[in-house]
Image 1 (cartoon, rainbow, N blue to C red):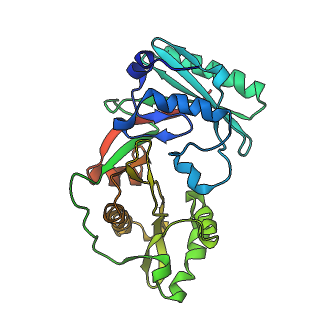
Image 2: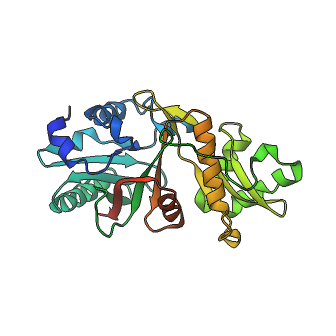
Amino acid sequence: MLFRWDWLRPVLTAPIVPTLGPVHPDTLSVGFFEDVLRAADTGGFLPYDKDRRWGGEKDERALREDVVHQPGRTLVPTLTRRGCGAVKVFAYGLHGSVVEEAAELAAKLASVHDVARARVVRPLGPETAHPRGTRIQLKDFTTGPCPAPDGSVRPVAAWPTAVQETFAPFAEAMAADGLAFLHARMQAGRCGPVLTATVDDRIVGAIGPMEIQPDAIGRPQLLPQYFAVLPETRGQGLGRVLWRAAMHWGQTHGAAYQLLQTEVDGPSDHLCQTEGLTSLGFTHTTAA
């Protein structure tokens, strides 16, 4: 199947692509969607897929034979076997009925593929009133300097050994935020630097890995990071210091931009909004 751009473009209310996630609005094209369908046949990563840095095989793939592509609506289902498995249907369309159609398709395909979860992913434009779900935000490194932040932030390896050893218990405490996974990658030597902040010679916050990868048109993109601060140390500005340190690292290492996804009204969302990032839209995921 080849997508028609004159059908697809009007319903792309937010720059989100199945299996790839957010993409820069300036790079958004029908080619992304066609590449995703072609990759479904191979199980491999596209060259510009941010997840390729983790190695292995692509876990999520598009169900190309079940795509619905018509004027005014496009439904793209994907399948993942991770955990109990899930089918997600990305519902592109300007009318509310597209969500109901997507839910029916997701439920049917979840049964066909014998997975436990059926989800609908609804992209919504930046003008959406009272949004829920996830906000897509853009940090453009070409519009102004990202100064080095006040406060002491260093890569884990730059701290004294006794301080470095506190990263493991911190990562375990913040496993729900992905820090245990990140720590395992660090131990395997398979990721970029991780920036950290300390209180009383103990690591209490981290953001990383810091890595840059070309996007679909070759522009350097700062890849998403895991980001967490211990609950008992929040409210001291450590999250903002860590985030600014990460942005300074990205700019000084040549990144053109970063795309972030933040939970609407969550701490990271408020931080990014106060730091002046551009909101590109939202995605709202519901059970089918």
